[in-house]
Length: 97
Image (cartoon, rainbow, N blue to C red; front, side, top):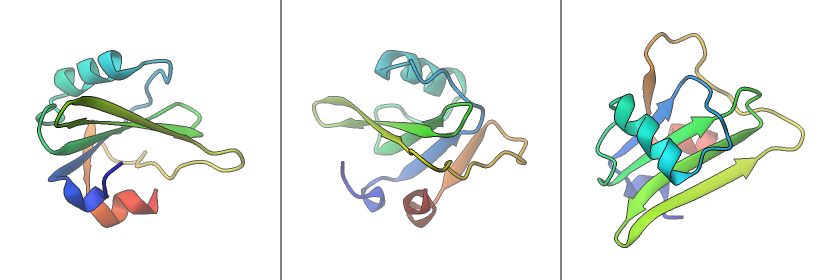
């Protein structure tokens, strides 16, 4: 994966998603939630209900890429007290995840 600094926007879908979803299902969420330009230089970040795993999708020059990380003993910090559906992150905040 490229560095987070290589992307113009980094967007978190705040509500938990079904982590069985792959690129097509997550792309639908991006479009339905108006998270940003799906084919632009953006990262779209999703987390499951238990916050043990995240998935990130982005479009590179040849197609979509999906990155997943699962924690074995801890949970990802997640913006749960905010009311908006989509949260924008800086590259530094993304790297903190």
